[in-house]
Length: 522
Image 1 (cartoon, rainbow, N blue to C red):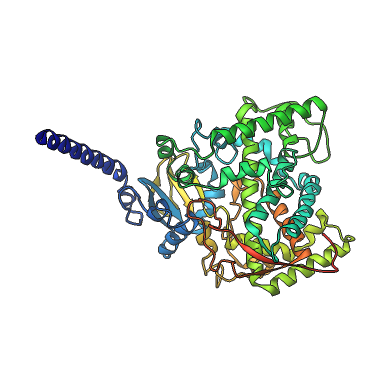
Image 2 (cartoon, rainbow, N blue to C red):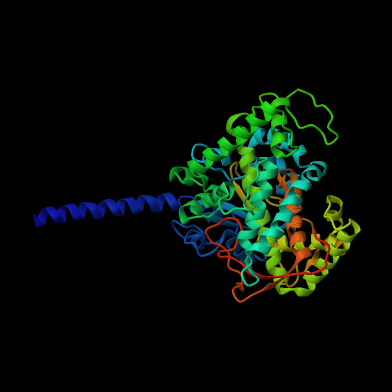
């Protein structure tokens, strides 16, 4: 019996060691990529590459890439490895311009690739589609985010802003409110009404289905956080490990919600002039009608299909991208303003002045006139870029400027937005919150491609106008009615959630709200 046990144990040990040896070879097989090309690189660790702190949930992606950016302070770029996958982290602003704009044809695609079977809605959304399909979708969807379309949707967003004020009034306890949750409820209602034409009820009910579903997407476990991270940096590994970002229940709910709404509108000739209406125009007519309601051609792009998950995927992207980015931006803005009363006072005075001009009502035109509020939002996105890096993948061989170094087709390029935003060469004393960095004079003095919260070039964020509009509306309604200060539970310094590839707080952000009397109600 003893001999048999020893034999089995020996075989087990050999099997484990063999498996480890195979895994070691697999996860180190590309570790000489940058050395062979003569590109400076950070020494990788087997199984982790240079992403150990990310994989072990010690740092969030933006902070990790910022640290890499800082380590390469005298270099235009530096090579790193995500697990075993090589990626080039670019620092030089001229090279960033080439990747994002000048040589865009060589870097059309993102590396971000959700599995088409496990995450079909994310896979087919505009953010992740590639090649000719991306070009067609981008062309079709661009007219949905013109200033004219935003103006039409403004009243829907403004109504949610009014409900936000009511929510704050009802849910402060001893003057304290958990801001992260409140702003998430606000953007949930904005997105549900603008994208789906459905009342989300996140600000009026604790039983909001939209709120519950978005929490299922963004309340990340380690495994789902790993799924999101690998989709950005090692998509083949994500597929091999069957890592799913959005569960089937949530995806099926989104499909059902979209198609039931489409069916109802088609049967009853309902027109709301929201995002879903515009998608329905693309589906039926091939394009969106212009801002003057003129008839459009029935002609559609050759081989362009806009049915099934291709259609629902765009709703999914609008839902997820619009929700997380804006709620996080408003949260961070209020957090900073709670520590900077002079900035908050100046923003409020501008808000009150513009509201008085428009008889106490917030209008689309009035929002554009609130230039200092715009600076506050810009500085918030500088210090807290929600997507703290940009990823691109070479679709053809590319020779790095002023060198004979060639990147092969499929090579990944990363642009560390957070690192650039915290570079003291561009933003002196970068930890300081200073909206005046975005005065016209100081913006002109900075090099281009040093402010990238929405990316740049043909593949920049298509919904930046919508994101800025709802962020400003939420902020204006709060500041017109409340003074916001930090309280005993307010975290300092702020702690980012290491499970999330986007930039968000690990815990809640409680702040103290004091009602302002005798001011125009926004």
